[in-house]
Length: 306
Image 1: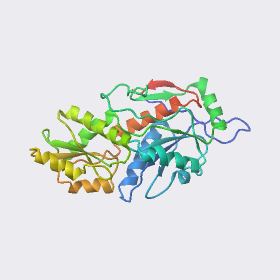
Image 2: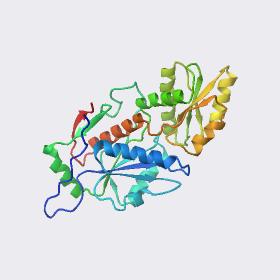
Image 3: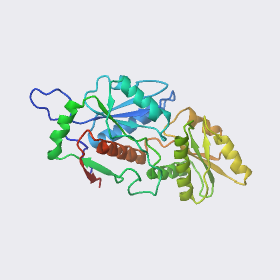
Image 4: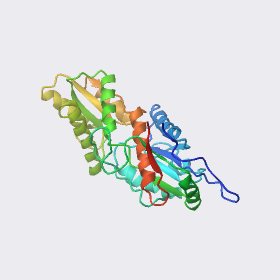
């Protein structure tokens, strides 16, 4: 049984009306594609409802609401969930800058440290929180949490980016099957691209993990910024003798980059990860780990969801 992350607000006489539960703020890139925002909203809603937490969505580019706009009328602490598949510039720079503009202070001890893809299931290296673990605040600490929000009403706890994560390798395979990919197809992993070398390394770790599960190497192709491009990666596989090539989309939601993949010359192109249950599971884990590791709020006990 999954238990709510935090208890209902408990306000004593004379205390400010700041809730004892944080608000979930899912931050996505933003896109003019009509299918993009519904994915972000579905993910935020799923995480919020899983734990009984209020939720909001903000965007760092293309359109609003921005982080300051989304938080303008939100009291109390916020857990920020970066809806990005790599820890690039938007995660490391844009989100902290926008939180500062919103008047939010990032909590100490909650620095994101996205782990590389490991084996499916079990603990993820560097996080120390089992997959599916949900923190439960009991009576012994619920009052302390409520008191902490009075002192830290403007605090933001920033979680790790969504990926890479072993659960998402399963999602990539699901999306490939849904697109009509065949078991012996050569596969290219399509990613958005970045000028950040650490972000590119994260994408490479995903390709390595997917390759291990498929039993053959999976090269990476990028939709922008980095090289090779997805069409170039597909062409190289065909030149090497591949009869069929499928593209696995390391993209979160529909948008310009996902639309470009249709012209990559592949036989099958998988849809973005979207609001697949595994994405919600990873976001839930990121939220749990972020709150548990901050030094400014009480650390709740952990109970695995069953």
